[in-house]
Length: 342
Image (cartoon, rainbow, N blue to C red; front, side, top):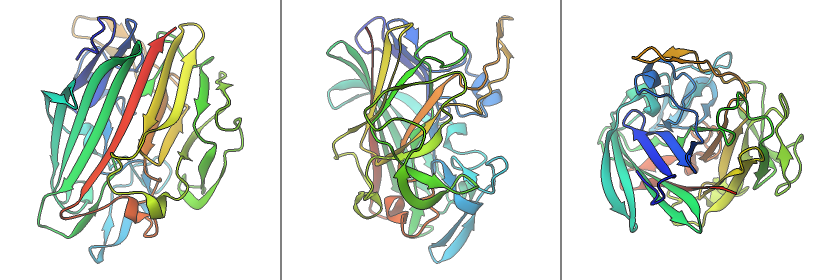
C-alpha cells in the first residue's frame, strides 16, 4: 500500500493483521522479517502484531465477576503469574481475513477481519474484530492511520473484555544494532506504578528517570530502561468511552535519530500507552529459502509504543468500564503514525 510517495509504502500480513514494512524515504522503520514464514517461527516478541483479545497484562491470569463467574487465562508472562497480550496464541498469532483493499474516509486503505470464537484463549463470547489501515501524505509526512473496531456478535454470554493495539518495534536508525542515540519526547510523564509482578498498583505518579513531558531525552546503550504504561488521561476509569474513535488524538511520543534525520510521531485517541525500550528483545537468527542468513537482533534493537487502555483494566472491576463489551456496543480506537525525513 502506497502513501502516494514512491519512497513511502506499507506492507501487511494476514497473520495478526501485522505491519511488516513502514517505509519512509526508502527506509523501513519497523523491525521485520524478509519472509512471511518467520513470523510464525521466530516471532515470540510480537513484531508488528495486532494484539488482542486484550492488551498487555491481566493480573494473576484471571478475570473475576464477569458474566457472574471467573475466567482463568493462560499464564505466559515469563516469571510473572500473569496473562500477556491475549494469551499463548493471541490475535497476533491468528490469521485474519484480508488484506482487502478499501477506500476509508477518502483514503486508500486495507481491511482485515477476525472472528474470535467463544472460549478462544478462555475469553468469553464470540467477537468480531476489524482492523483498517489507511495511508497518505500530509505536509510532506508519511501518514499511517490505524483503526480498530470490535463487536460482541455471539449469543454465548452477555459481556466480554476487549483491548487491541499494535506491537511494532520502531527503529529510526535502520540497520543499527540498537536504538542508542534515539531522541525521545513523550506526551506525558504520568505512569501507572507497578508491583513486583509488573501489574499496576492503581497509583498514577510521575515517572522517576526521565525529564518532564515535552522535554526530550536520548537513549543510551543501556539507560533509561523503560517498560511502563504512561497515562494521557488520568480520569479514564470514569470518563473513557468504550469507543474512543471520535475523541481528538493526543501526541503520545516522538522519536528521531540524528544519524538519519528520520522522525516518527504517534498520536492516538487512547488514554494510555506502553513505552518499551526493548531491553528483553531477542529475535533469533534465521535463513531465507535462498540461503541468505538474517543475523539475530538483541536487546534495545527496537522501541515499542503501544496505544491502549490502562494495563489490567480487564482484571480490575473499578477499571473494567474501559474494556467491558456488551451486546449492541462497539469497542473502538484510532491511532495516527506520522513519519518524515529532515
